[in-house]
Length: 304
Image (cartoon, rainbow, N blue to C red; front, top):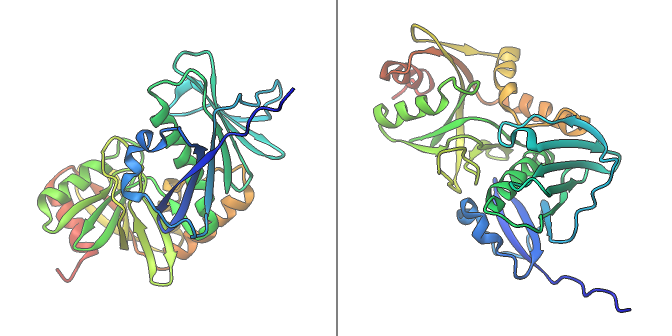
């Protein structure tokens, strides 16, 4: 009996925050059609070193009775369809498909440099959403090996410099960005949910990514980071700088990392400490009005 023919793979590459994310996938798999938010990040140089690799497999997922230690089954995006397991050889992420009869199955190395995503046979319209989300999760972990942190923030490009607005869900990050766009000249949106921050030889930079929440803003751009601003709804507008440990604590909840990987979590804390040493952090208690944006702007750009 002849062995089944090996699947011929093609590679599609993207450059995000100066890191190369490569997808290995079957030649006839229409990956680019699914990853529409990645179009501005396509990268053709096959000689450049791959930093993060994801293999797309159409083979049957290696599901077993012992999936590993269940670490969490909580997901805002996927509800009770989501599971995240830890095993000796890495981590397993599963999402039940829309039909409820198969799993999206992702196995990642412990450092997330290489992951294999098994696509369910009953392919559905959710392919783009699942692969995009899986790639975001993988990138958020593996990028920690490269002085890079993904954060939950809405980012404004003000005259060529980035300002990242932080806060709990529903605090008004997107609202405050829109206030800048409407009331602060020379302001445009860079990313509305998941930018990347990286320490480079030039200093600390913030990058647009293919992940921007509900706002379609997928810009392959890099800006010097002018500052972080943590928002809190309040009956009056008040701005205060957060230095040292206060600044670290203000930004930490917005950083993407899984605490079950001690090495990557330690990397994240070290990177964040170095970022905070170079980038100011503000705390803005505010109303959703133009005066709040003006107060914040005057604090971050006192010479304008």
